[in-house]
Length: 120
Image (cartoon, rainbow, N blue to C red; front, side):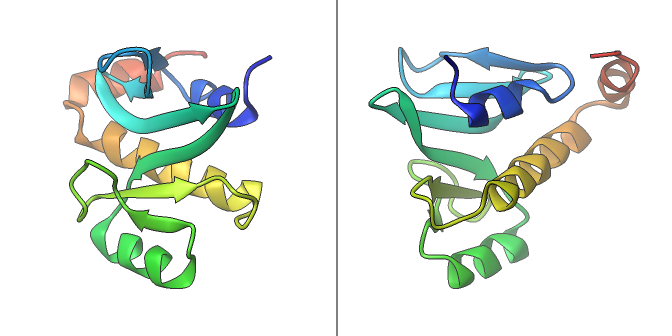
């Protein structure tokens, strides 16, 4: 059975899973670019790293102990979120949505249009 956060990431249009660094972490991509890096321990998601607007990233880190600068990532643009129950599922989904949207907006216009026209 898949972890609900992985299922949620894969529900995004044109989202695909990849393992470019070996068996872990699981990397979620859109248009060939990463929008989430997922660490799995004991068959469940323990951490998820997400792209984030720098100002929002700082605010989230100040507000939530579970949100830290991106582990092994550009700390200005990425947060690593501990999935420890301290954040609601809706909060984590909002962070995933934000990351996905930032990466999608960075793609070339033709690629964005092709993705937006997909039915699933």
